[in-house]
Length: 250
Image 1: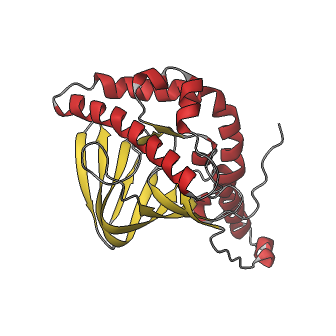
Image 2 (image 1 turned 90 degrees about the vertical axis):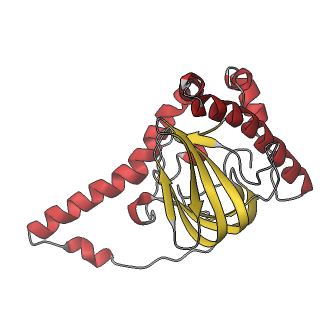
């Protein structure tokens, strides 16, 4: 295995993207994205425009968190979340452990029969590359399938039955288990290396030998793909190593 080399991560080795929530209406009459969870990454929404909400499922039950300019919402691993469009909702997404979501950390809330078969799951999650009508149609079908599974989970959780939600978490963990060695390498090259670099800098400062400051410089970047079809909406991405490379199949 070739180990990843991520020499210039964003601060904290976070992932970064911008989303405009889907305005497609789902089976329950709600417009928004594809419900999913992350296995090891905390995700944050920083609202930059419009109105909407994020619906979450967790051991706390079902929540509907309003989103408006300036508000922030974040969810830890295992929290099912669904972005809801309320009118021109625009969000900057900050993602822990950059590179891991793109490597498969995110799992859709597809119905149990899809989650139980890795091949079916891959087929249901994949969409054609590009930003055209064919890709949009596939992304919408994927969203609708995720909403189908999500609504069943939510209905059970609302009446006090956490069994389907907990089984979804276990099914998601089974789906990604084989990917963990690759995730570990991405984590070591990104988030862990960033933390260790700070430790080395503190050691140097304490020793009175801050030679690392001679490497001071600045970097810049601009979005390299506009309007891609992400899980929650149209997604602007930065092609920075380990940051927001496109999700597989998108």
